[in-house]
Amino acid sequence: MNRIRNIVILTGAGVSAESGIDTFRAGTDGGPSLWEQHRIEDVATPEGFVRDPDLVHRFYDMRRAAIQQKQPNAAHMALARLDAVWTDNLLIVTQNVDDLHERAGARRVLHMHGEHLKAWCTACRSRSAWREALFGRPPCPVCQSRSLRPDVVWFGEMPYEMDRIHAALLDADLFVSIGTSGAVYPAAGFVRNARDLGAQTLELNLEPSQGSAMFHETRLGKAGDLVPAWVAEILGGG
Ligand SMILES: [Zn+2]
Image 1 (cartoon, rainbow, N blue to C red):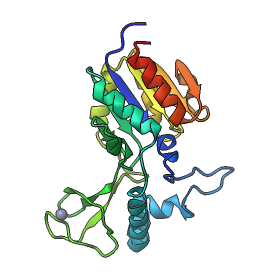
Image 2: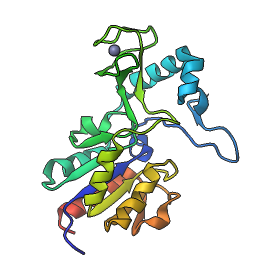
Image 3: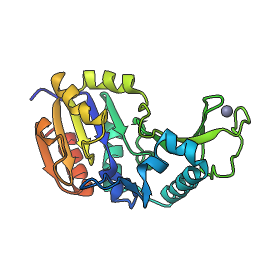
């Protein structure tokens, strides 16, 4: 195998699950998709926000408060270590809206689905760091309008920074997908993009994802076990 220089890592719910962070569950057998007993349509779509903004604000206020009590796990720590020492290009594209990659020390992180700890002003389009509740409609720090919403990409909305992600995939020698279901596009398509462009592809997951067949290699197990082992291997020149 050619020497690996440029790495793109996609992380999903499976990486944060071991830190005790809840995530939405896709419906099985035709049942509704739920997130903490709420239907996805109610708490994770623009239409749900228009219908009942109080419910949506309460829901994200609880999530925002909860993640601040959680701690990064061994998978976050290992990826941060890789980020710290890897001198070529590396990008951690995460579907997670928590800040555990950053709290573990990772710097090259792109939140394609937004962040719990930011608020987005629909009046002036600015984004502000945010740790408190939005339920009481606090004013935007930039324009004072009471038009803040969670800076989280909802179903039906376009993920952030797709151009930057595709540029990174174009240059990638190795694409690693960690703890994602492989069910949510466009992220589910990254493996095909990377592979078509010549990258090696590796999946680390608790169980085979919907896209497992697309990867050159799949390793099954807990992210907290698999990720530190993989990082040690790649830093060892493996
Ligand atoms: Zn504003």
